[in-house]
Amino acid sequence: MSKNKNLLDIKNLTIHYGTDSGTVYAVDNLNLDIGYGETLGFVGETGAGKTTTALGIMQLIPNPPGKIIDGEIYFEGENLLNKTEKEMRDIRGSKISMIFQDPMTSLNPVMTVGDQIAEMIKLHDKVTNEEADKRAKEMLEVVGIRKERAKDYPHQFSGGMKQRVVIAIALACHPSLIIADEPTTALDVTIQAQVLELMKDLKVKYDTSMIMITHDLGIVAEICDNVAIMYAGSVIEYADVNSLYNNPLHPYTVGLFNSIPDLDSEQEELQVIKGHTPDPTNLPSGCPFHPRCPQAMDKCSKEKPNRIEVEPGHFVNCFLHEKTNKL
Image (cartoon, rainbow, N blue to C red; front, side, top):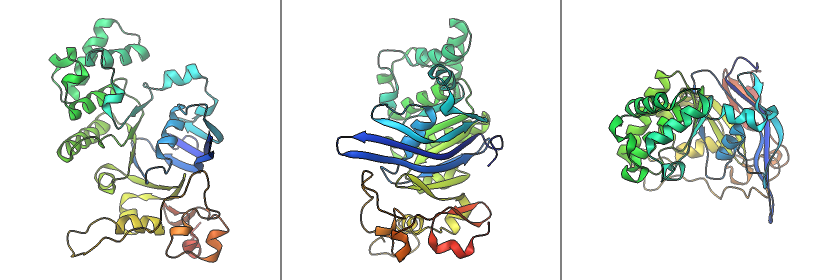
């Protein structure tokens, strides 16, 4: 992968947390990239390492107990791990923004929403207070909120409106990359659809790349270009949306799709993936999925599979597909 071909290149990223019960292997040798103007769906169960990866990109891993052990994170051709804290503060918000899943914890309850958007603008752009306030009101209207509500406080908004305010803050300085960490989890289904449609439209309007962290494959199908399936700290399958949905290759990915109800067929019960996600302080040897895999072979418990390109742009970490390797 070229350092300049993609907006973001993550290479061999490893992040650990030191705890009283042992070392948590949160992210293990992760490789990932995202192109300019692309939306990447980042899918996995709770505890797979999705949010830790996002915090690693933002350089917000709490240290202690967390620490980036190894790897490189190239953004616009420059390694973020070599940046100083001051340089990262300049990048956060202006070039990379993050939308968190709970807007209540993202907004300051004692500041008006207009002031919170204006604060982000003033932090990164040299503008007067009047110009920042004007732009803040414009951003509210962009996300579908009347500019007159700039003087209102977060508690005066519904959950969906709060999430729109958070999106306005994230987009205020027109960043190149938005990381959305399950941004619709706290919202009901109707509002979820509205917020996702808004994010989709604004991504196109501002030509922004986006990483959508989720466990909802429906959301991925709706707004993503490519998908990375994550399990136990590693990306185990990566492809464009059509390839992944029409031809899932990793047994874990197949299991995820089988666990979704099919409205066109009668099913008495869903197929589930047996067992539980592994303890991140004590990951299995070899392929981390092998204890739960219905197609596990003897070597799966002893060796970790390498990344294989089965078809152009469709990568999988699984011994089942070694013979179809086209590299």
